Each structure stands twice: as structure tokens, then as C-alpha cells.
Length: 503
Image (cartoon, rainbow, N blue to C red; front, side, top):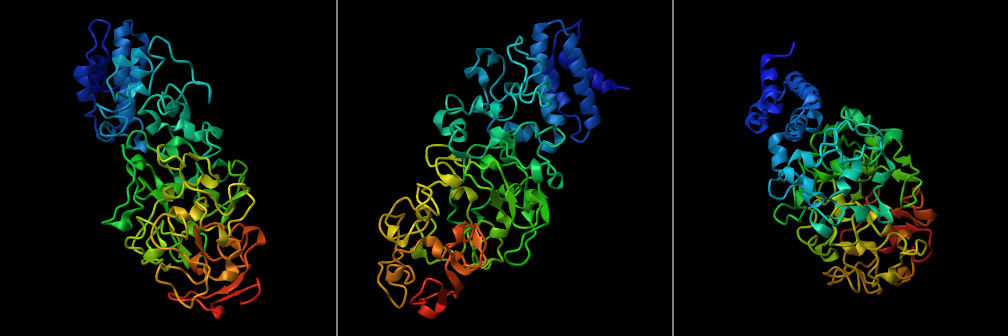
């Protein structure tokens, strides 16, 4: 039987036939229901639904809707960690700068900025102006007026929500993108923002939707910036990723596929969000790769990035941990551009430092890019034509992806350079490396020596061996058979390869 308190609250909140609505006076009492009292909150919601449909007054319907949606958001989405305090301070819930669809339809003036009803509606509240959801068809379990990414694009389309600075729609129309439009119906209230040991992402269910990377009830304005004072923290989740869940791999030996993961709710580091799709957590194959048919970059398979960024590897980009805390040997400051030339070896980085839009005026993050593999700059391992391999003789070309962070000869990101194509017995004063400066290497493609997937390698300095499999050994181009890393200079005997003299 329904409790007296539930009856009293809903009667006052929605209004009975014999008295006007008083939702504003009673909503405070309603939200004081115990957070764990799901039974009570569901009773309130159920009673609101029943009364709502029989209410004769349009005014009561409109005011009651706002409260009804509030109840839904605050109590019936516990898996999404929707809380009044978190939402009210979020990007969407802020009372000054939050979501407000009145700029799209003046009828929404009835709702204050940040009100839940700008996204959630019951029975097309504004006099039936909203069409029924069509993809997937039928009523929407979350009471949103448009399904999945279409809801987000209503505001994040360049004409609203801050203009071009928040134009997400155009990014998802780029040639290379996370393919959110390919999936529908993957998120129900029973699965929303819940890992369930990989079930919603595993195997054929692997997918990407906006809410896989963003929690709309918790995300806050602002993106990441390089933390010079605490460079080891440059992989922490940024404001726009707050409240999203992710996974932390249990790392084993070098270049081994992690098969055990801890679900982090919420994620505290950006890579934890990425790895719930880009690792064996979703692949469930255990072999370091997963066959795909939906890659905008034309890939037939994707690689396990948890394996590639394993801190036990001989080399890796410092996404999981710093080089000094892992097994990698940091580069000299002279071989890095700013801000990476400050305190190298003690830094971490974001996946989105490399992956994102080529237009710096667009929102950060790997939504879309005009460059293959969602690269923010240039191309790799080929030039923009997709076939011509980059060579050492191209070091002055601004299109080489590595120049996003690494200093090379000619026009670059700043600092020293990697060589002048003259043989020297040691690293020169400008940071030149006598392997790169070796004149015999001048016309050699970069992938003769380096991995085509620069996340990490089982060899030092992202070297690829001729015995390594694809895609690390790009189209069988790798020539190195043995490599010995030296912190100072390199000599003939440090490298063995199949490309002939002087090896």
C-alpha cells in the first residue's frame, strides 16, 4: 500500500482537482526522500504519472511535468549517479549558463535555464509539439524528446549552445570520426552508464555513443590544460569527462594483453574512458586485436591499446604513467617541443593530445577530424595521399604528425632538431641524433625503423622489428632485426638491419 507521505507529497506536488498545483512549494520536501529509498521514489513517480494523465488543467500539466521530470532525474537513474548537487553545478544544470531550449522554441521560456525539462519531456508537454521518437521507435525510456546523439545535436550544432566553440555536429560530419550515428538502442535505463563487466561493450555490442564519453548530468565547462606544476597529472579526466565510467587494466608482463579490468565509476583518468572500447575489455579476444567493419579510417582491425600503453613495455607514450615510473627511457628536452620539453620523463599525457579536430577553434576531443586516425595534425605513417611513406628527407615538411610534439629539422614546434644528415659520433649540441643524421638514412622511410602504431612497442624508442606483425610492421617495410638503446651516441653495432651497409 502506498505510504501516507508519498500520497501527501504527490497530491501537493501535482495538484488535485479541488486545489491548484503547488509544486514549487513541495519539491523541496520531495527531494528529501532518502537517496537509497528507491521504492518510495518509484511510488512517487508512478503516482505522478497516473495523476498527470487525468489532470484537466493545462497549467497543472506543465508545472507538474517539471516536477515529474525532476523526480525522474533525481531518483530513478541511480546507475547514472544523477544527483541534485552534481547536476545543478554541471554545464547543463547551471542556472545561468546551462541548457535552455528557449532560443530554439520560445515556448521553453516556461522553464528556467538548466531545468531538466529542456531535455526530458513527458507526453510532448508543450501542446504536442514534439514528434514521437523514431530511432529507436516508440516511447523513450529516458523521456528525452529526441533519441541519443540527435538530442545533443539539437544544441551542439553551431547555432546554439555557444556557437562554433561547441559545434559538435560538424565534427561528427568529418571524414574521420567516432561513428555515433551507426548505433541505436544500445543504452537502456538498465545499462546506462553501467559497466556490467563488459557486457554492453563486448564483442558485437562494442559501440560508441555520446554518453559513453560524456555524462550530461555531471560534465562541467572547460577542457584540459598542461599542468606544469604537476606534470604527472596530465592524464586526469578533464571537466567535460567528469562522471563517466571507465576501466583500469591489470597490467602484467611487457607487451601482454591485459584480460582483467577494474571498472572505475567514475573514471579518474582519461585513458580509462577510452580503454573500455579500445582494449580487451571490449574485444574479449585476448589476442591484441579485434576485427571491425565500421572504421571510418578503413581499418579491418583495431589494436589493443591497453597492451600498447603497458608501463612494462620497453617504450610507450606516457598515457598510463610517466616514463620514469614505467619502463620507458625519456627523450631529451631538446627533442621535444613546448610544453613537453619541460621536465620530460615526469609527464603524462591525454589520448586527446594526439587525437582530435584539426581546427583548434572547434571543441577538443576525438569527435572528428579531416585526418585519418583522428589525428590533430598531419598524417602518419604515410603522407596525405595515403600511399607515400614519410622519409627522413621530409623532415622539413609541416605535415609529419610527429611534429605535433617532437622537434625535427626545419619548421617545427620549437627547440632543437634531430639532425643535419651528417654523420657524427655523438649527439650534437642542438639535439641532433646521429642515427637520424646518418646520410645513408636520408631517403629511408620512417617505418623502416619505427612502429606504424606509435602508442607503444616491445622495443626501445618505438622501434619495429622485421619480425613484428602488422600493423606495427607497416606492410612488411620494417628492416631492423636487433636494436640496442644507448643514452648517448649510436654506433654501427647498436643496430642490425636487412637494409645493407653499414649495418
